[in-house]
Figure 1: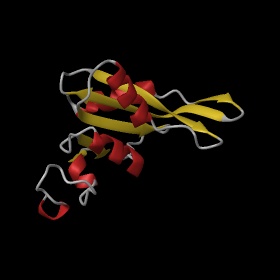
Figure 2 (figure 1 turned 45 degrees about the vertical axis):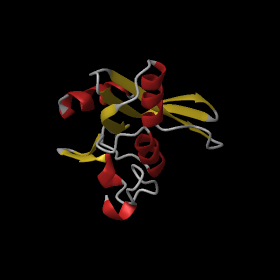
Figure 3 (figure 1 turned 60 degrees about the vertical axis):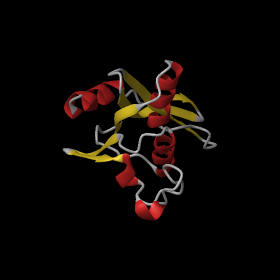
Length: 134
């Protein structure tokens, strides 16, 4: 999928709002495309006690709920429509889904494979392979 189109889907998903005194949602949105060409979206949920989650997690959850599991491309945007590279927790979550070649939009006109965002991953990709020879 074209990055501009996926970015626009993420921007259209933004919906910043206060849910309660303790919860805000929608200030960051993510859109992803799977190997089947399906698109999933999600928004962040921020809570005063840190039990919320990132927009990437919400989009991945929607994908998994629909029965898919392979992310090919992903982008997240902030309330100001700026591209936001995934946090460490999101990078780890994406990596554990098993596709280190997932393309992540990290800036305008710059996408990187997930493996480059986690160059010294803690878990070998397969038996016999170490982090040193990846």
